[in-house]
Amino acid sequence: GRGRFAVLEGQSKNVQKSKLKWGVGKLIAHAPIRPRVVPFAHVGMEVLLPQDETTRKTHVKEKLLGGEPLHVKIKFGEEITFDDLIQEHEQKYGKLWVYNGDNNDHDQYVSSEMEKELYKKIALRIEYHLENLTKKVVSSRYS
Image 1 (cartoon, rainbow, N blue to C red):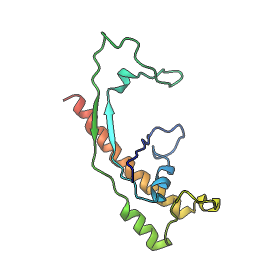
Image 2 (image 1 turned 120 degrees about the horizontal axis):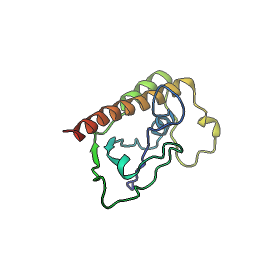
Image 3 (image 1 turned 90 degrees about the horizontal axis):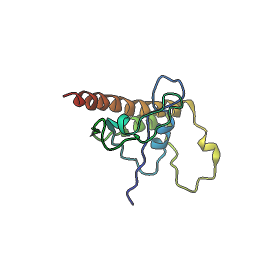
């Protein structure tokens, strides 16, 4: 099919143990074609797009020319796979439903506790890779 991508950010306003919400895992688990997830991390964007300390909204740096130099580093990680988690889940609990675009049965959108556990495992795997990648890009900033 046509190549498409989505950017899923790990910033959450809710207080929870993980940084990614389990909805990320749900999107991956029920996708008709298993998405390819390639993590990336960056450092230096806080200079280009500083965040207002009161509102937490970002805005473009006032003086793009002159002043503090802009150095943005971006690092891409290896593709993250989830087939093992999904296969393990399906062996225990049966085949997961797959979104096909024509789904009118909204009952299937209500997730069981077992499905939510799968979603959390998927989200935690992504989070693990993002955290390690972020440590690498931050440490490379100073080397």
